[in-house]
Image (cartoon, rainbow, N blue to C red; front, side, top):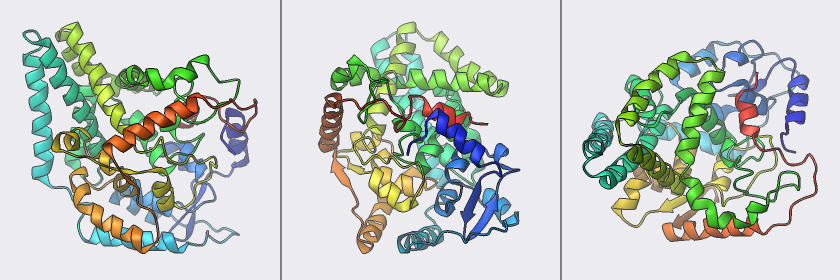
Length: 411
């Protein structure tokens, strides 16, 4: 049902031969290679015995695809899973989008995003002593935008520019560990809203997106629709802390050294500006990323199904009413498009939306889109509703808090 620490260990013992994944109609035995997987072994185990074709192509580079094709398919007694019509149609859509050049990056668009970001960083630094409130506003927005730009660059494939600049943006401005974030975030992409697997809904005991068991419930839950705003402002504090913790856990001293210039920069700013900008940046990001998934259907089956249907069921797009909100949402207002095709550059989402909408209509799939006021209203209502739920009796059907850490550090 869900992946607790106990049944995760049982699953590890059960899969002694190593994860066996089906891709393009062939089985691949990853027993010897799984421990070297950049995304971790945990997510491979989730797809053991399943068709991982669409999940694989959604996240991997041409080089990774070439390496897969160089592997010899495994001899298996069972035939690969039958490809459902909706998945075959989705693969045809992906092939068309790739042929039409949607995955190609545009240097002018890339540079405009980078120049605008570091202009805000420079101006915020310049005014940090003479006008600290203005500086907090500039740097808070800059940190939010660095989050979006770093997110886009880390998702990018076949781009040396993004490979190098992603570290500069993510590490210097926000102090984020690329490896930690990538493993966490990619798991979210291929197991969206799967309770016990998706790290982005592992929020207990601070926020509850579903009824908890009595053992993990807290009396503060009934107030979560009141305190979520100040809690959201701590998002970047949490991500910075997790980035450092993960680097120490992995003994990744190279990442720790790369973080130093960013923290030296923060140290040179007034303390109020450093703290204020981190809190504001975290709040601005949290008010975006929580709107596209948390109100959608939760999946209590840890086994993945159709990749395309999972994204449509667990994600919605947001219609921003003006250029300010369009800018602040950083492409995440097109969250469904991003989840279907994570490596498409964010500045192409708006133009791609009609194509995806038409495909959904042809396949009788609901393409969920809501206004900005509607998603914020729904989000508040969801938190309030879950604050009043009766806790479940203690059982093993729900995972304990921290499942995302267990999966990411699985050996």
